[in-house]
Length: 221
Image 1 (tube, one colour):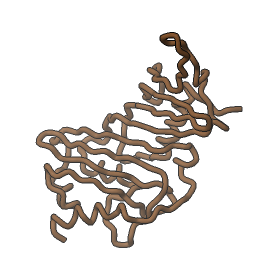
Image 2 (cartoon, rainbow, N blue to C red; image 1 turned 90 degrees about the horizontal axis):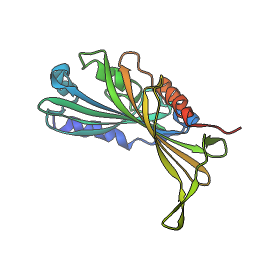
Image 3 (cartoon, one colour; image 1 turned 90 degrees about the vertical axis):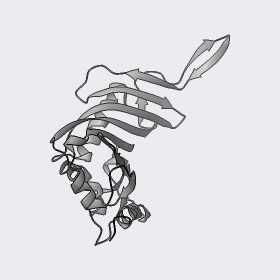
Image 4 (tube, rainbow, N blue to C red; image 1 turned 180 degrees about the vertical axis):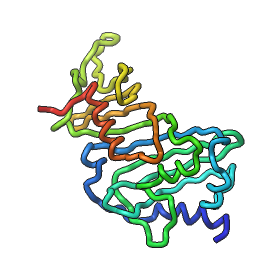
């Protein structure tokens, strides 16, 4: 397979049928988790990355990663670019699994962090993380009245969403945005996470984020 063909083969992972199972995302009403890596070029094994993928420095890539085990119930969007001095990558987890073909190469959805870790000199890196939840209001609610109404310019205005700066917490969550409709509570969470590549578990991460949003929202009783 030529260098030109390899990125195409990687991108074709997006064409697998979705497999519906009860993933950690479904259990927690989590829509997605995105990790944004910005690494110094000196800490990244560029030659090995190119050998494995056929992607040259300066060429952006984007792929949807399938899984060896479809029972994990999620897939990963993986994109990035190797610049002159930095390596920028996004690893974004989404609900619904996609089964890999028998001859499909790495990386896979359930092991992409370990695969990236094999290319990075540091075993642990700090990375900005964006998380999205969509909770049914039938069993989840804000810890304060939302929506609420205020008067502006002599008119009544309904406030349906609010931004929050969070106190220090063990989840390393910094900011959040929460909004509501009649039947949904939408939560966006921003955190700075310490990612240990070798032991990374998205299941543990989603469970942690689900606890973090309890700072300002809670299960309805």
